[in-house]
Image 1: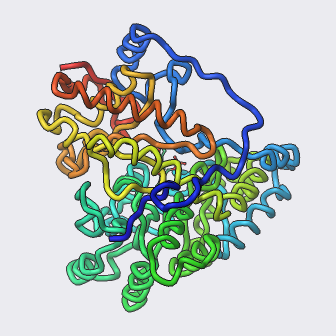
Image 2: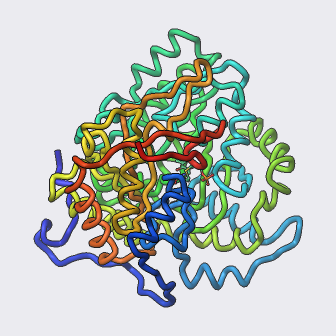
Image 3: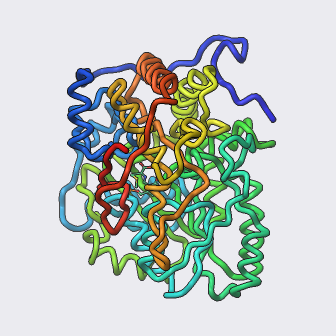
Length: 468
Ligand code: PM9
């Protein structure tokens, strides 16, 4: 395997730095251990239920938490807040067409708005939706539309220690086996994510999507891409796949998208805005259906739940996020944190992915059973130690099987330290790593949690726990 480390010393040359400087700051406050204990109890040991003002370093998510550039803020002043036909929509449409290459664009308020539209427009009740690992909101929308999600990611993705450089790849044999079992007509589409969030931010290779396209063409199956972190995916292709080292990120992104029939997007991630999303399609039939439905769920088809100024900031964010220097420093910062943590032998998902460090909570707390919610426990412990907010990505996030009502027991039981884009400094990463180490050092004394409240949908957002 190639050496995936990027710090200056390891490459034997000078260090990299962010391609921006800080113009405006937001103060942070550090709470006392007693204040954090009280806040955690009030939040039912669920980091989603903490007040933001009680958090010191917020690594809950990279969603909507980016710092916008001065160009984006200037763009906010150019908002055309007409109900219909805002000029910012046409600018956004042109940016998506230019950088992602799709024909038809439907704006939405955020990613799950677009997931709802594509699921309703492209899934018939009882159809199967194969995908490279589930994502929480994506699978729920597919299920609500009557679809049955089938995991077709390569087996290596479910093993946190496996060093495969493209752990997000689709296993084509699994897709073929599904086609043989249920017939191509009973497959709604392939749900392809780049990178794969729940696997640890792992990429899909260009060779894999090319081969998937060829297989799908033989059977008349469409491929829809979750493009939420596809720019990060393009970085890994540039770094690891033969023939792409000298290609710009923008060119890699466009080539990848060209193998797919459309994409949905949470613009709150790669696209560097605090709110927004879109659905992009190459086929008129699905576009017609989605454009018709957007007026029911989101807003008119020229704003889809966003203000004109949001669409302007988003169009500029799209241009900025494909810059090679930007993405290199973004992933460089994630790796900086990961390499600090792994030097102490603390188990994290390998290789380090695009948007976050995923602590392997099973290996962290080998004395806890999965039903003791080890990843949720670890997220709570991190907050209690130093005010760092992380997110559970294990049994709680996986929810219950809609057929049996039982917990789903995913192989990966992870706690995610997610890095917002252009927000924190290297010193913040040092503090986070030290907190992880402190929690690791007292791991043997740590007990698990019991779930005391569970809502029906996407339980991880609102459920509550008590210490065992
Ligand atoms: N992802 C994340 O923190 C937001 C909260 S958890 C649901 O990782 C992918 C790959 C995502 C994603 C959100 C969505 C939904 C779709 N696909 O949050 O609705 O990571 O904009 O996007 C979160 P929205």
